[in-house]
Picture 1 (cartoon, rainbow, N blue to C red):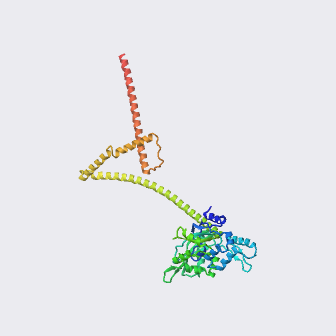
Picture 2: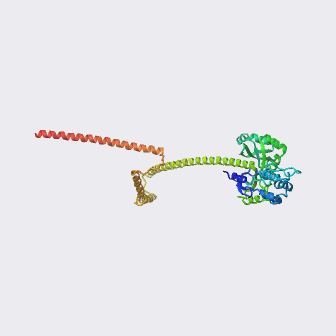
Picture 3: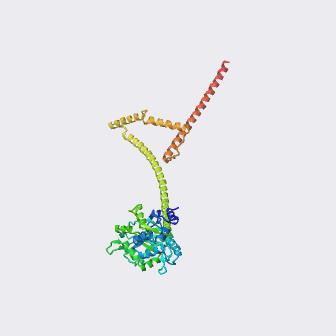
Length: 471
């Protein structure tokens, strides 16, 4: 179960006499929308679970909790809050014990955040909205603080179209927006990004560049562009091309941020608001925003699921890229090893050619001094190599160990080797010469055997002749 759903579950069925703190997550909206551009910012974990009030104590002490809340929040709207408190604690509509039942019903409506509270025959009923201070379906989440400046000119348009359709018709959208701007030739509409939203909506970030007659260009500030798009006649034209909402994304000045944090939003308990500021996991990048009603909660969950899908898609793409890079890396390593073997073979062949050339060039000349020094160095190296404890002795020892392992059936490595074509041809030629030599040797042996047989036969015939003569 999502942690946000758990928190709201506690609000519905938890203890109504205590204030509880839970955790919620989502996108910031509310007072930030339209002025600071928090309508679609990704939220992080926040606190929620606004507690209610004690029904019995509210009936017994009309000036208790309601009086305290009236002192805290009633300065902005004293009349409306007083009407709400009266409807919840002491209605005088019927003048008998039924007023207490009506008070409970008004309290339930205040918890829900919907309905009308009747409390007097001489006054109209009070409307209970989700913003009333006694509504329980509230929480506080956190939204990312925009980092783009007003000079960047970024404005977000929310379209009632699917992302695929928007990307397919992006050029038409740019042309339509250019017509909305009056088809001014000095203005150019640019798309900075396209992102999918739940409910088949799409978020398109745009900015407008203005070219001057002297050839320079600059971006239209975001506030200027947003003010133009918010005009009544312009909004009608935007709605015709599917634009449902426009929002700016500009960073907050220190004064705006301070004012936003100091003043609790309408219907939010200042104590909960202060606790939300204390529990902010990253005050430099996140700000608390109210989350009111199940509709807002559901919208946040939808956006969370949408972002999770996008992240998973991106992770899958990265995973496929990593697998492909690993395959290419293995192929490259094998090719490097093959080229090293080929380079060594070519080096040996070049060395043999140089030796023969040097022999032909030096034929008929006496041995020079540098050649004599080189011969001495080579003899020294040869003696070092042939020493029992040096490389040749170690190599012979390793070869004997390898033969022993092969003799006892040791497990061979599964590594595969590739033989160069030229080397394979030389091996075949060498084996063919060995085979021809063996065939010639076999024929010579056969001829010798025939001669031996002939000699033996001649010796046996001469013995018989000797015997006949003696007899």
